[in-house]
Image (tube, rainbow, N blue to C red; front, top):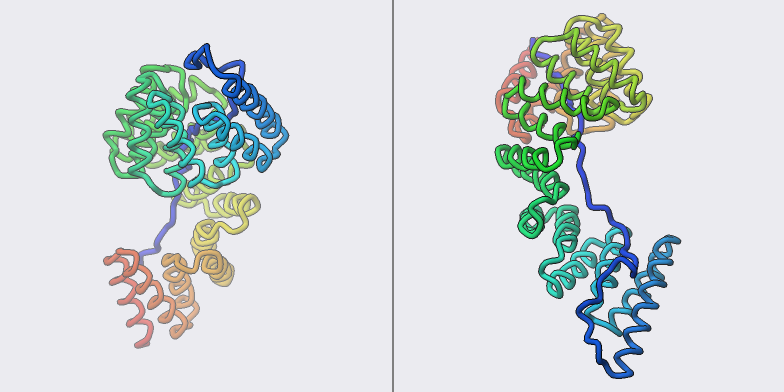
Length: 371
């Protein structure tokens, strides 16, 4: 009988823009005409004073006050790039992406070569799910500054999300060429190569990430995942051990090690790791589901059902949990409840596009109902 197993690969590190206010001393005012009227000079002075005040408010986390100061500075001097940029940063910081995008758009209209305006606008667009807009802005940032590593890293991650794995690989490779000691680039390219079924290339990249940063627990975790996939269980467990040693609070390393232990029959060890996973992330439905699988292997059917109940509680759409609970209930001769669970699993599998799993669950539902 098939028992669906939920698995999770570690999250990929993402490099975002460093959203920090620019101080007046670090900005060039070379475009200011030397001979201006007294009013223009007054406005210039007042706008710079408001800019400095906005920066101080920002540093004190008085974001409403900072926005007010920057807005007044922009009214007095609509070409003050610093104030526009900094207001965009504050809007970004408080989660108002639409306002942030508006500010960054003002900035790049005023100065089409402002690479940070395009980069930060791309980040804001990505956060409101405008992925194509974000892709265009990352590309524009790279066109302006072909050495902009963070833009390649972020565009590579976005291309991965959009299914352009070869494009993502090219971006991470370019980031590595520019900055050979960028551990995140190796980590991310390793993930892309894993998805492209280049397991050897993935391990090489994770190993290089570790060489650059020996304390990079994510690289150990991902390398362990890849080793397990290639059948190197001993090497995988060793890497998970190191990942956990480096970061004892990273729940996915325990979860992935648990899956590996369960895969070769160490059910007690797997349960111990699932327990630790759930201590760190109590609402993690996959851990409950998979701990239930280990409990069932140890013939503790009621404990397995309890875990499936929890998995369903935290993720009512987790088809595997209904399927697995149906199997455990059938083992306990609770045919009616088993049939109901298999029917629910079949419906969810169908909705999620898993036709083969749906047909299997429906078949078991009918068999359970007949007996």
